Length: 147
Ligand SMILES: [Zn+2]
Image (cartoon, rainbow, N blue to C red; front, side, top):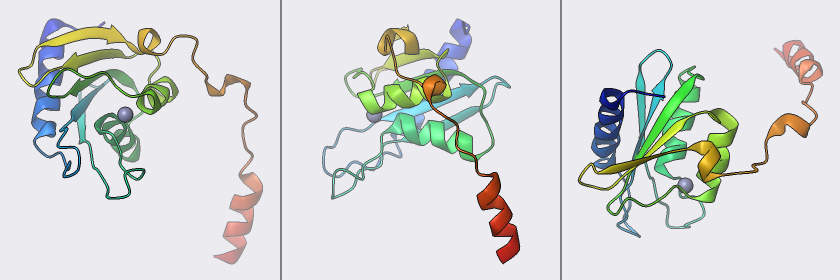
């Protein structure tokens, strides 16, 4: 469980990330920030698209950005919206995949937040424990041949 000071830092980072939101269609600006085990914070904002379906939420931007930076040890995530809106189902599923033990802070635009958890947001969740892991060793070998 993260400290009150860490909570405040994470919510402030999510609020700042919200300023970068690209939301020309809904005008629903969202910022997110993830806290890593090493204390670093990675942020994201929602990025909408005219096709709507290509829109990506702030939470998934922050989480995937962290993964792309080689960070995997998620401790907490904050999301900041105008009205303290809760993460959508797709984002909850991604949280289960990448940081099932994360604290989740849900803030409105004034920085007033509530604290919950991934497990509380998506109980009885689906994860990859029952899935067969793909074997990429053969495709990697053929890739080396081509190179
Ligand atoms: Zn979402």
